[in-house]
Picture 1 (tube, helix red, strand yellow):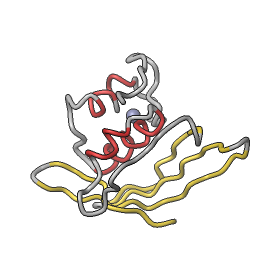
Picture 2: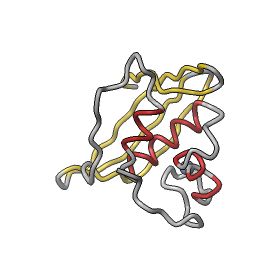
Picture 3: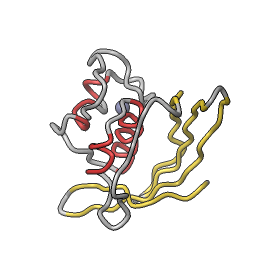
Length: 126
Ligand SMILES: [Zn+2]
């Protein structure tokens, strides 16, 4: 399924305070691959918000990528805070709501670069 449409001039779902067209939009459309782990992490968060499973799978490293992935309206993503980006890791907090309960996901994600492209490898709580 293609991503949900999102107005290019609206602020990006990843909370960068940049318009979507100057942030995650060109990543999800494939025009401009993410140049840094943080940019990839942000674009993957936006892909969850916009239910773009294809983007999530293609930016997932083949060694850890699930065979299939379903993204839908649950959980409802409420916001992203990138706490630290250093080297090939990004620590973030993502807020979401599931069945009426607000929760937080705190993760430190690891990324790898291959042939000039960044991929999500895995994440641990923290
Ligand atoms: Zn963004």
